[in-house]
Length: 288
Image 1 (cartoon, rainbow, N blue to C red):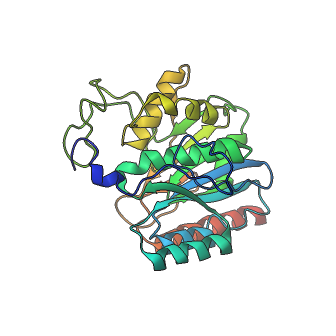
Image 2 (cartoon, one colour; image 1 turned 90 degrees about the vertical axis):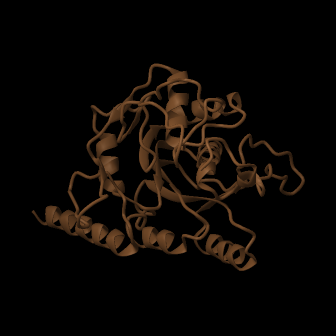
């Protein structure tokens, strides 16, 4: 991976276009204008490739299910594929069936994940009312009920909350997959940030982050570090480490009851297994 953006990465990116002739008010690549039907305690935005139909289906059939009875909503952030007509038709059918896709005009590419995060946060800020927002990847198991129980605790801050698996900022990589050039980031260390697979933002931070998007023409391609740099600009907000955000990178597909989010869930079978274990434990607690 080159240290700077490859022009080819943006070949099919185009600004959002007017729908129905009205003025475009979006500052990001956001296309969708669907609105949340009501206020939610928890909004979960899942980053997903247009091609990951099976992952989205597994999430809908497991931890995202039951949200109509609860105070949370799950949506999927999806960019543009390579112009495959059959795939685009399938996405249109998926959106019509489930109504949970938030679309962006940016090309689907690893180094465009920041653009996808931007458009998701702008959608949340403009079209949805919520108390807390979780940004997650589609290879993450989220337990919404455990997450909400944590967020409802009296000692959990209800504003200025930025939490997840948050390492101290280290020196930037100048080569490899996570490389950034000196032009993209001139400092020798990153600020503290919460790792991209899953993190939480309180409602007040989302519009404040969106207001900063115009400050950088080409945002840092590492979306989690980018959000950390904006949080640093806002000031007075700490990246708070929470042990409930876990790595499932090695070993068996195991469930732990105090887990808020698990990464990496490598297949749909593991997603289903984690969900079943969480439901079994919840049922056992209710019986006692």
